[in-house]
Image 1 (spheres, rainbow, N blue to C red):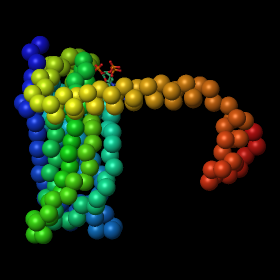
Image 2 (cartoon, rainbow, N blue to C red; image 1 turned 180 degrees about the horizontal axis):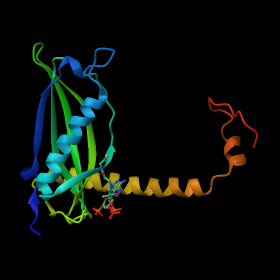
Image 3 (cartoon, rainbow, N blue to C red; image 1 turned 30 degrees about the vertical axis):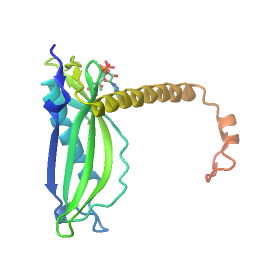
Length: 183
Ligand SMILES: CC(C)(COP(=O)(O)OP(=O)(O)OC[C@H]1O[C@@H](n2cnc3c(N)ncnc32)[C@H](O)[C@@H]1OP(=O)(O)O)[C@@H](O)C(=O)NCCC(=O)NCCS
């Protein structure tokens, strides 16, 4: 399978934030932004792999600044890392107020997408050609985030197996919760 350069699957979508996207506070719903991020992640992953892809996991979704009705939201996506069938797509989200002439960076998030074959099983994706030092930095960071994620997932699974209600309750004394049953 021939490797493909990061630049071949760069994808950007821009969308006008219309009033029906707003929540009760008049700001844009987080769910609207998540849905747009999912679309751009799909477009980018399918361009790299040439296959149908599914979203497996979403990382780092912290909306630091509100998006207003009338702003132009742009989502810039690129494949940061590839495994065997998985691809980590980094998405930088910015929102532009055209009238006042400023652009704000609302968040950078990472979507893990998996390519599927006609049998609906995970399918091998092309290796990634890293064309710049920035591509190398993103690849290495994504690999590290993935390692930390799997390590913490294993630890959580071990913690679940070791769960002992008597021990756990003792550790809750300084937390803002109250035990309302006998055990
Ligand atoms: C995710 C899914 C593809 C895993 O399938 P599987 O047969 O268990 O395959 P594997 O365990 O080999 O995982 C496939 C890849 O996904 C990666 N993966 C699995 N779970 C992951 C997670 N939680 N986070 C990141 N990567 C994950 C694996 O590391 C593997 O990567 P690699 O091939 O690059 O090494 C499968 O469970 C699926 O199709 N889920 C539904 C996805 C979907 O419908 N999404 C839409 C959201 S509504």
